[in-house]
Every structure is written in structure tokens, then in C-alpha cells.
Image 1 (cartoon, one colour):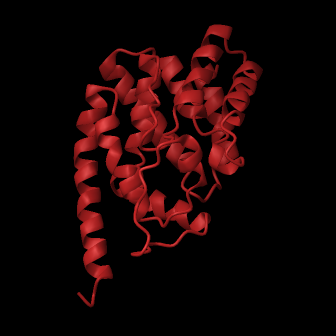
Image 2 (spheres, rainbow, N blue to C red):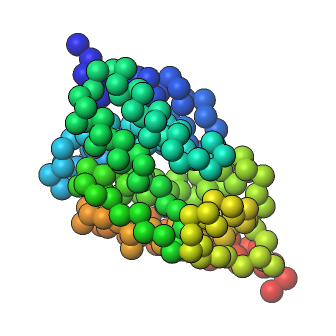
Length: 215
């Protein structure tokens, strides 16, 4: 008989398999698998962490006019329809409500170990080779330039400023992606982030060297 985690995974896979902005089922599945790995290492409640991973992007604010209340509502609706306990629903909804990066100057501290595992897994999938690909996939989806040398990165000090940003994709490395290594919550997450962070640094250096062909 399928478990609650299995049933939620099947629903999310069917819903997001064809998504093309980098927030598809494959992203969610990678976050799920990374979460399982981190939760096992850190001693977190596996079911809560896995459910949090599976529904963390169920209704991302980026696709709902900046409204970050939609995700928690959709997560609660799905979990309740699948018979999750009230305690599990509350724990997972809290993860969904807190997980998103909201600007360089905004603290988004997770209140539970399970949430910390999911947040680390989600941030790991935002960096490294996959993170680079997802950055430019979303940038194309949102109509953003690859790079604008005349537009410096902005370290947003509020969630509203971050959400309103329309900057070029390369700026996103400075505004978010390069910051994530030092914002990992767990020892496991921090260890896994090191190599991915170095790869991004090398990529951006190569990108700029190729961009500046006249220099």
C-alpha cells in the first residue's frame, strides 16, 4: 500500500513533470533525494522532511504574482486530502511558508531541523552546475537578459525589493547564489555546498572572460 509520502510524490510528479522554468518535477525530486540524505545524517524526522521537500514548490510566489501565501495553502490542501495528521500538516506548512530566499538582507531562519534539511536541499539545487542551468532557464522564462554590464547587482534589503527585481540573470549569482553556501543550516548541507560553490565561481569567471572579448 502506498505511503503518504508515496501518494504525495505521485501527485506532485503528475502536476510538475512538464514545467519548464527549472521548478519542475526533476528539481523537486532532486530536493527530495537530497533532503532524505541530509535528514538521515542530521537525525531529522524523515516523513516530515520528505513531505516538506515534495511540496516546497507547490505554488511558488514567483508564479503567483508575488503572493507567498498560496504555497502554504496549497500544501495544506493536498496533505489534508491525502489524510496527513494535523501535526504533520502544521509542520510541513511551516516549512513551505519559510523556505524561500527573500533577499540578501532578509533572514529566513527555519524553526525546525526538518525545515533546515529541506531548505539546505533546495539551496543545494540552486547552486553548482544544476543551479547555473536553472538560473538561466528561469531567466529566459521571465524574459531577463543574460547579462547587462551597465546594471550592477543589488543586495536587496527587503522581500518586496527582491520580488520586484527584474535584473539580468548573471546578477542573480551575486544577489543570491553566491550567498547560499554560508546560509546552509546543517553540517551536511555546508559540506555538500563547498564544491558546488567553487564550480559557480569558476563558471562566472569564465563567462565574464568570454563576454569581455575586446578586453
